[in-house]
Length: 309
Ligand code: CP
Ligand code: NVA
Image (tube, protein in one colour):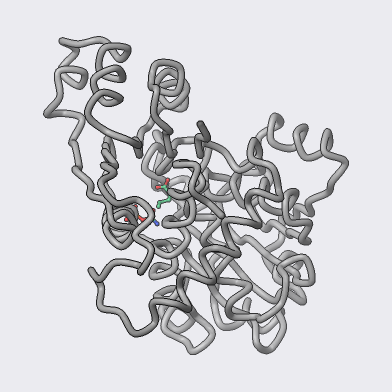
């Protein structure tokens, strides 16, 4: 049984296999309507249970489309409506019940420990739909989007991240190691990636480039990523943090340091970290990025269900 919790724990060849499958499936259904099934309907009769402890628009909808197009179905649980959320039932018992009724479990939570505990007690695959330390389905899908737009392997591109060292960046760092691309990060000193992340990169004998200057990080980039300064799990002084990032806003001026055809990507929702002029520019591919979540998550589901060919 394969889980999908952190990119760093998944072999690079499996990640590549997922992307190849997603590309084929996306091409094959170009003339199909939203809820028409892929011809082979490989997850016919399967139930994906989704649980959100935090808000979500894109992850919720894209997993709905993903499992439906593969022939399966989904139900979405809100943690505050469960006995577990009210403290009246153990996680172990909840996990056993989920495994009894469902075939896969997608969890968005503010606790990495909870993902691990579910993994321990479930007898069905678990997919991390965002935790404080990672957002793997988002980032694998973003690799797909970059390669689709640039029409070349991401290993041949300069990727820049301007913003906070959050869950999405942690997954992007893991991806930079797995897919061997150059990653330059622009963030204030105080908000650099955590030691355990940097140590892991070192252990893999790989390198990432960190600048406390947005212009240097953006220089010569093929793609610039950004994300909200304040994440869902942030328990910080919001005003101070936003102020700390005032020189890390993605503006037209900052984009001018990158390559002329530099693509702007953002997982959404957005805050003040990007100017409207960039967000709405022709170089911004954020809507395609959101759409591709559904395509890539289909192949992630197939990987977890042992059906990836
Ligand atoms: N990008 C993303 O995960 O969006 P949601 O929080 O809306 O799911
Ligand atoms: N880093 C953001 C991503 C939202 C999809 C957060 O955790 O809130």
